[in-house]
Length: 349
Image 1 (spheres, rainbow, N blue to C red):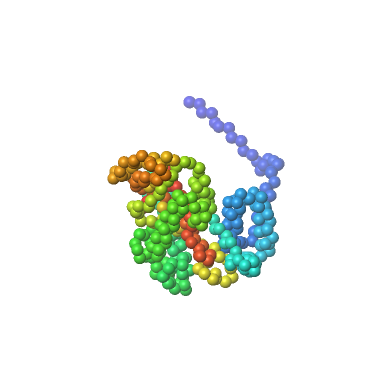
Image 2 (image 1 turned 90 degrees about the vertical axis):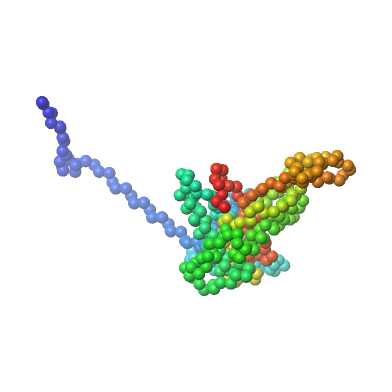
């Protein structure tokens, strides 16, 4: 058996030294360090961008806002930025006071990361959904602590000098009751107010009361209800609230500081919080809905009087975002947005 030896070539040191070598790459330039921007300044800038988008002027005002922000914060430390921002806010407040207005228009905070908790089950993304549910519960607890420390829960008094760890330990049972339906929880009055505002909203929509709708809603939900209001059809609708099949529940709660003045607001606190049967008739008065089993047959219409035919009550579940600025005088809960559950997922509660 003949085995052919393999041919190998070895380069000597002289040959390697004669080969041209590529120059080493030039070092990448170190990035220019941007001045730090405080959380309050970022929230205010985000609110201004959100307001510009809603007004449809974002493309025109983006460059102007960027140049103004660069000039406003150029060469300032984070502490100096906060002082300049507070002074600007105070000057604006004094300007509106001289004009005879009680307060300047409060900036609208961007929509926070509110989420609908879904059932975990045995799906492929069970771990991811479980992590999202735990994250939502943790953010709910931290928001509850923030609201309590600002004395914004009616009838709730806590020690403001408590640190994060001690407050979470002492108030753990209360802080993790955001989704609870018990009557002694801190959010129980809020849930009752949410239901009352929801009934007023539907009554204003059915009565086509535009001023009430504008007072009860915020953008972008205002555009949604105004589109329903301006829908021109020949139907007459009647809406009744029968009862709560399941009590109103808070699924997700977020709270952040929205008032940046040097002094505390005269009313409320600095924080802003973001925290669900139809009868249809045609122009001739004929009922187009399914009559209730106990409803009497509809007689022929005589004159202009409408014969009411009770409808079968239908269960309606909506996931609505409400917003309230505690530093605005006579502030009230307003509907901010409507969330739609993801298809194929079951809500956890």
